[in-house]
Image (cartoon, rainbow, N blue to C red):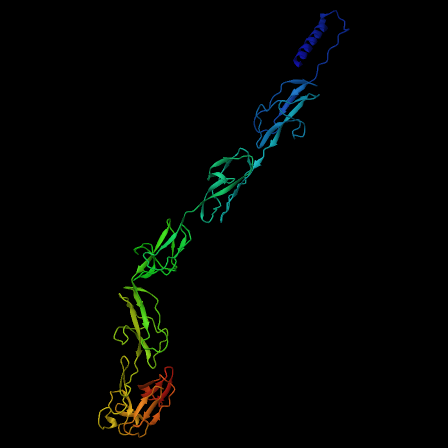
Length: 497
């Protein structure tokens, strides 16, 4: 229509020009020039587009004509935005038109601006899924739908007891993504959950290894490789006839590694069986050997043949008055091997008994022969002159340094001799044939031949007391001499001189 009018207008104008140039008879009546019709354009503006091209509308529109809005034929784009039609205002506050819509041309040119709608964005967050240490990665990027997300590794060193980190799950669902893999962002935020693989675990089993009694301990703990295992004791009192429990061994025949209760080892990559280690072992037992008080030490160890034994001391304070503890001997009568406390010996192939030994007091008590009081300590009591027939007091001879307690044959005096000399006497004359008795009540009494008491130590009331005659003891004058001592096992109750 617009092009036809313009042709007609051109023809009319051409005729008019020709007429004015002498082409007619020359009147101007009835000849008026027509006024051209106004036309307007529609221009499309990319409005900040970062790519593509705007459509071109070449039509000139008269006022009142219908304009059909074009589409985004040039594929206009703007980063982070989506094309949403055209608007009569650059800020989108005017009238919006979409492809194919129409409007009526007014009395001015029209510019249609590309309308952009900001694209929605989504986030990716990471969840440790019950981690017991470390931290999750942080992704601060905002992603549009369709964008590619690259998976990070375990940058914060996440850990979970009993598990190994294996990767990430999108919103907790398979598949598992590992470092460097990608996925396409959808239309919603994403949570990446840490994937954990349970570590393999191993057990420790105890074997009785041929036990004839008791039960094995049970370790219900499961161990991961590298964990520390504490070895249990023989809590079920395992026993095997003829053998002694000697800890645990990694081999049934005892050729592996031996562990005792409380020792530790590091778990490897396989379950472990610990076998009861049975050995032939021997004991050391301590004996009182005539002690009247205190207790023997107890050696609870078991020794294999060839092991070193350290001899214990008199830790229980064994006593045997008036004797003092000397050492230990493998025989009660000192005929075996003697060991002092702290000395050592090598265990043989049988149990060992050690007997307390006592220091002898250096004396030979006077009187009649009454047997052996202690190995190595003779006990001889002379009640009167032993050789038959008359004789003098001096006829009682004694070895050098030995003290003798007895009665003078003629005088009946109660005397102490040493080296054939009277060291002490009651200085009384008793009837020949008198005798002395150390009674069961602890009283030392001199009787005449008729049984009448002539002299007494007055120490009755101490049953079980001992009578001793010691050589080279300090007397009441501070001299080293012979001295009669009566002891009731705990204290001295009588001394002469």
